[in-house]
Amino acid sequence: MKKKIGLALLSFTLMFTLAACGGTSKNSSDTGTKETGNSQAAATDELVPEEGAKLVFWHPKTPFSEYAVQEFEKKYNIPVELQDVGYDAVLNKYKADGPAGKGADVFVLGHLELGDAVKSGSILPNDYFEEDTKNTMLDEANKAFSWDGILYGYPSYAYLPALYVNKDLVKDAKLDTWDDIIAFAKTFNDIPNNKYGFFFEANGYGSAFPFIAAEGGYIFGKGGTDASDIGLNNEGAIKGAEYFQSLKEILPLKAADTTTDVKTSLWEQGKIAIIADGAWNSGRFQKLPFKVEAMPWPKMPDGKIPPVLTGVGGFFVGSYTQYPNAAKLFASFLMSEEMQKKINEVTGFLPLAKNLQKEELYKDNPVTLGFIRQLKQSVFMPNIPEMKILAYNDTVVSPAFEKIWDGADVKSTLDQAVQGLKDTIGSQK
Image 1 (cartoon, helix red, strand yellow):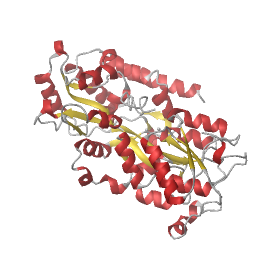
Image 2 (cartoon, one colour):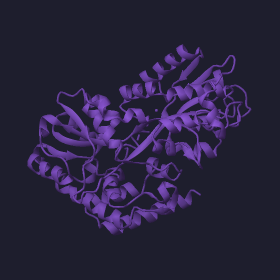
Image 3 (cartoon, helix red, strand yellow):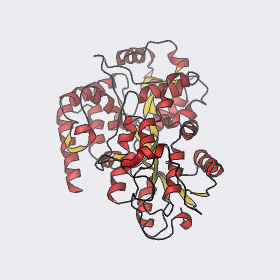
Image 4 (cartoon, rainbow, N blue to C red):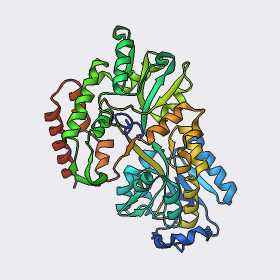
């Protein structure tokens, strides 16, 4: 998932058997707990797990998921079976196994899957912990996990790109604006020897989006909810795409040659000073034999801020669970600040708790600090099903930006891409 939504964009872009979910009767949100409208009572009433509850958790087996299960079992004395299910497989597997009584009680999911999960009746609302979630998590994260005004998920982490800087190469160079990066790259570049001041994948919309959004372009209108309004070829999008195209001056390669593999290899060899890449590589990059920091995408020459696309990951309670109270306790536990810190430690993904956005918490970790700053300059991807076309099966928009990078006319290419996206959306209705 993270590679698909990661930098071309978020090029994530962000991770089962019978034990807990036997039976085929489906739960509604009325589980004997608090209804959505009664969440104030949740502040004083303790949610009591069902007698004999045991849970199944679908998540890739990682140091985080194993730690979370261990800590929850110690705290609540509720057994949890961790089943190793990949991020991309979770929802389709649940839609097949849930009705047969073989689905998980709690599973990981990215917010791009929310519309499908709701429409397929696969998840229960986050009702009992709704007030707590809304009070403690970032507003945009709560919106990302809400559908038709109902909060469903337990948001836990964000996945997004920022700029990694090799401080041994950049030293004290000024990097406050894109003009600064261009000026630095012009003095640093040694193309015959594969040395670049700046490098990103120019073969996808993710790298172009920050420039487009800075100038007023967008993916879908009405805050990402209206797929009939595509803003990838409006006046601002054209201006931003033209700026994206102009960066070929400092990265004089064909788009097809700016692959993730090429970028990562040269970066790890110490031949690139600045790269755009995802938070999920922070642990790996901090082990390199040179000093690495991270920073947000700097200001445009006109002073506008280029926001990156951001995804939200977290946890959901399956609608076929026989232990909804215990499952909600576990999902809420996975969303806790303690668990968000662990996710950040293990994966590099960014916490979504408001209390964990304070920059002073990361004064000793310049990589995480840079990503926290980038998170404040980001646009959360729309959670409508149409966004999955761009995230998982983009055959029109990313190829358009590849053509633009290689010199195609910006306006006509974007017009064609938007029409192609509209046609693709129409064919799937």
